[in-house]
Length: 164
Image 1 (spheres, rainbow, N blue to C red):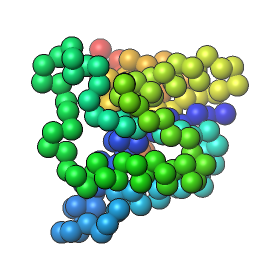
Image 2 (cartoon, one colour; image 1 turned 90 degrees about the horizontal axis):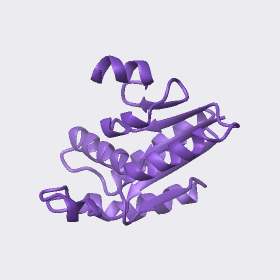
Image 3 (cartoon, rainbow, N blue to C red; image 1 turned 120 degrees about the horizontal axis):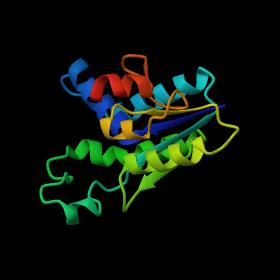
């Protein structure tokens, strides 16, 4: 089996700004509809083990550790308002959602990848995110990143090639 771990916050941003390119005024909930559509496409392609990790709140323990760490300041209200709607829509599809409150979505993806990789029934773990920090979780061809925009699997060899 292949486990698909989706960075929901990234997907919402990607869909929001993709809509902004196509429309001067994106339709209401366009980003949420985009995330739902792309998730349905993944499921229609045969994915059976899918979950989505979401930054439920943008601030985390890292804000206490590092001055200037990212916050929700300056985030478009439209994106913040769509987070709970997107979570509800994904749950309605039967897709588990991991809302990260103390940690960040990429922490959820890393923990999920670690746990899934330890399960002998899992053939591959695909982290659907371009977040380069998650490159440290990539292991051989078993735990990989999947760049959906470019339809590219990033395995350990590609991480080493790119980052050394």
